[in-house]
Length: 228
Image (spheres, rainbow, N blue to C red):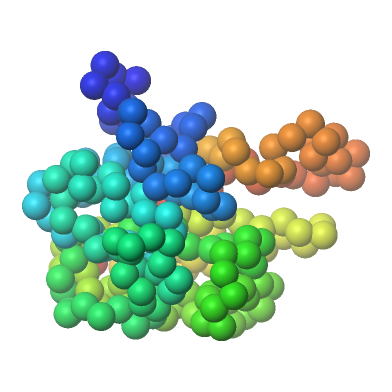
C-alpha cells in the first residue's frame, strides 16, 4: 500500500487483494453478500476514466462504485433492482432510465447464478440458476443496455465467476465473455483472486480434497471497448 492509502496501480492481469476495502473510509459495505472489492473499481477508473467522467453501475449492490468514484472526483450513477441505500436509484439493469451514449465507463459486478439470495424481487436475475439458459438470455439484455448507454470508444468492465455445484461445472465466465463479444471489442481479461467467500474454510478445503473438486479461487474481470 502507498502512504496515501490508495491501492497499488495494477500492471499485470493478476489482482490479489486480501481485503475488500482500502484506506480509512468504507467503500460499499463489506458485510454485504457478494460485495465488490473496492480495489477493482479504483484501478479501473484510473485507467479508463478521468476526473469529471460519468461512471454507471447498473447492478450497484452496496454502493462500492459510488463511494470510490466520488472520492476520485468522477460523476457516478448507481442502480439496483432493490436499492441497498438512498443514493442508489431503483432500476432494472435491462431497462435503465438513461439516454443513449451518456456513460464514459460502465462497471458491472453481476450475479453468476442463484448462489446468493440478494432479494425476492421477481425480476432479480440473481434468482435464476446459471444452469437455466434463461440466466444468460437475461444477462444478454443487460449487456445490450450497457452498450446503448456507453459512449463510442469507451470501456465496460464485467466481474463474474464460474459455478461448480454438486459436481456440475458451469463456465459462466466463458459464456459471459461470448455474450460481451457480440457487442464489444475485447481488451483484456484480469484474474481477481477470491479470499473471503464462505467456502474458504478448513472444512471446505478438506471436502474439496476428499471429494476431488475445486473451490472457486478467482473471478474474471472482463474488459471490453465499444467501437460501434
